[in-house]
Image 1 (cartoon, one colour):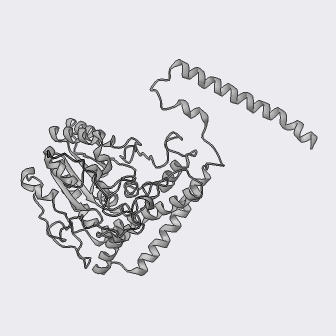
Image 2 (cartoon, helix red, strand yellow):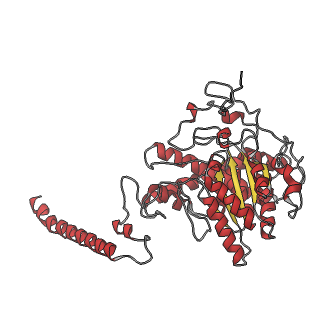
Image 3 (spheres, helix red, strand yellow):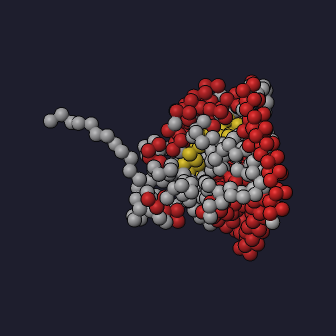
Length: 428
């Protein structure tokens, strides 16, 4: 009988009602992976795409050649940024459940990716995030009120009511706009980096996407251009194990690591413990230095876990074990950095509790201010005339005419209201 080929369909290790199973995650001992020189050739460092760079060991000590040797004060800043990001996320999730904003996406469990990388990069570097790197805004000093106003689509909304919530941008902070079309930011980052190199600048670009988005064609376009032209860019693939409802195996992570795609294109691929603040910082620092020295791009796979739902529109209990997050073998990035600082004698549970209360009060104050600029159901609203702005460099005649017609209608309506006001008063 002639053998027949069979189609392989990736299967998640555990479904709802089953025990979590992370036996498929290959984890290297902390401090065990070599740290090559930034000028090393791709063929000589392919092991970095297979192993996992880790710095914090089980006793919360920093060990091995990747230890960035940060001062305790810098670690405390990193902890503050991660905790603020988490508390901001938690508040916005509750606000969405109350019906006060329409949509939200949390980054719970992934805070080290954005915060450690944001701190390792320079302020002039251009960032092209996905929708789970709000920590980049926190690191660069963004006022949370501005982020909240964007989610409210109010009079202080940076997007003027034209984008769904969490699609932030910040020109002066060098953070590119988030796009709902997944993976578009990768080729954009490569193009920006190529332009920076052409102009002789020392700035680099960095971009982020999830492992699910790596199945998009834009990922491969970006990898090709980055490798061919040796663009000074860091391409971050955040492997948080789940796309909106599909396991990472559907994006190709079942047989090879995602980091192995780097050497396949001719660039270094580094697999890092995405919940280890120190390891993420060190790997980013290495890739940034390589890019600034004309060493070209680096693909970094951050092995982490999406602790929360994909978004407020998602119910993860329908496709994965309910308590799977608690079984994640790489732990919680906030807790791990906190414990490292305590082990150094530079932190305590009491100080952590005080910081948490301080940041909660700060988030509350920011929300009260954001509400003063308008909400979904009340307060001041955006001027409808803004719909004609930011579309064309020079407004075409048809839009000029429509804008003037709207102004005339509004003026007439206002005049009618003024005329009717006295008669209402007399009747009273």
